[in-house]
Length: 289
Image (cartoon, rainbow, N blue to C red; front, side, top):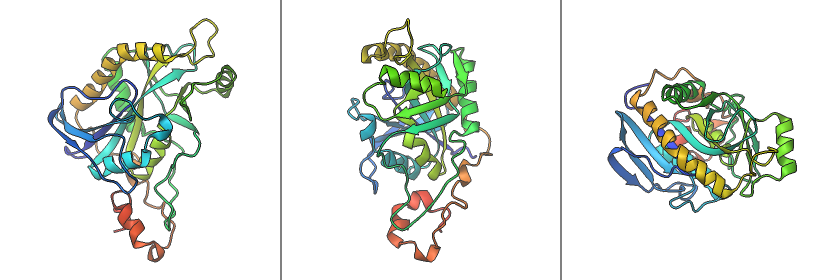
């Protein structure tokens, strides 16, 4: 990985901007999939080139199902991103993950409905390996940054992604607990799948804000309780991101994320429509030269 490595940050609930960026530039990106959630802000932080995109739009206008995940990932990839750090507010499904603490997840379960979850189709078929949806190298850097700041952070865990925007029923929450998931959220899918198809390293900095509604002695999750925790925790999230940026681009990518498409596209190259290749040039250009 060169010094020109660009890290993209997708800010979730509570994190709508990054402080301290130098040489700030805001860019509206036109994509084949429509408009991204927000203009992409670029700049340097701690010597690292960063891109920032507000997942829910300026002023938090988009529910999770309305987020244009394909446009977001396409835009970040087209602007040179190689790594994506997703910041997400989540509910804790474990007694020992307390509201206000961070989790660097390593597994995801997709329970969303009807969200476009692939760049492929329309004459081009691709199947990426997704057994391990989180980049282990990027996750390790996030964990080290959070731990180095003295914040309470848990390494590893399974995040179940539900459709929303309503929170779980009590029966659903108890069922999720029985399934053994550690966290529940609404936005990591299909974001992570699309990042893998785009050959981007992807990791999630999950901020626990509540105990959903399974806990017998804690308050049920509400918007007000989530916002209160986010206000206290968002500065910690910014500090973690600043620490990652200060550490620089890191070592050369030794993960498989950068070569996810190496053998994924199975359509006969001669039969792939030219317009499909053009539409996905930032995504498939490396392997369909």
